[in-house]
Length: 365
Image 1 (tube, rainbow, N blue to C red):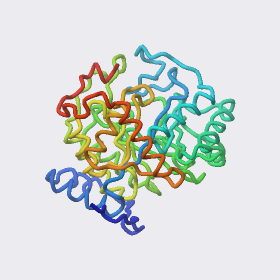
Image 2: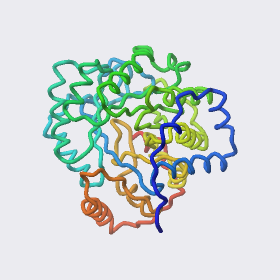
Image 3: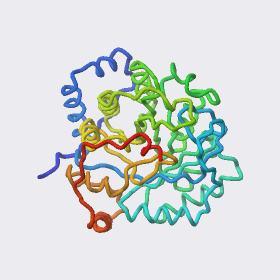
Image 4: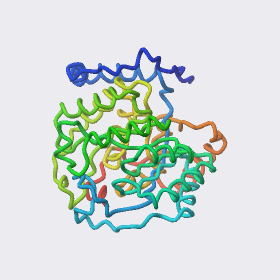
């Protein structure tokens, strides 16, 4: 079957003047109507059967001075996380090679810093340069950036910089007190002005209201330039953090958030990010139908669990989804990576019970 043609969103179709009333009206649509609207917009701007795949590596883990209530890497919480120094460049390159072999087209590197120190910059710049040599897109998340640091990363070849807004301005103070919302917006401005692509989204399920979820999406959509990548994370509760017992977000509310993000940011990649470990195949499929078209491969996202790569490969096969590729990444290499993943699992039962949901304890392991 031939996929629907992909069209680029015209500048006139991208709005930066969304109001709270409009967004709340989208959330209030009947579920089928909302998904139909989101899927229609998705097909106007993307191949509906392609998903961009990234791999995320923690290059420096733990001991972060920030007090983000959701984060096990904060030095303020006892979560049993083993702290690690900045990884050697050679180890990062090996992990990037592994990521490419399993089908990722973008390699993301994250460090648990408030902001990178000048002594760290030569190392991270070298990491970017070496990963780029592999033909992969590069992304980093290092905390707040100055204008000069953003320019240096751009000159080293960094394609994307991730810096999430996390939640609405109204709820932000209940989650983080060690940096302001304006600090986050300033970093995004420095990244944009340096000429890099912005990766910015948030986390839902932290006890925020429906209005807060709408407000977060308004902040993202009404930026001077909408983020090229928008990660929507479902909170992964980690024992020892202040949010370890917050009430779970209703799954359909999460899918609605994906759909509304797609409608508001038609040309952005909407990433189904943290929390996929607790989602069954059917929920993920609905998220793709709602307009999600980016995921992380791999068993761990920084410090939280994620479905194994082979599970994603098999889900993609069931749904007829292909991996979106960069110009540097050949079709032959992609097909070989998929074949190798499936071959590794050839002795297993390929069609497992998709209705089972991993327990929270497994997700936090």
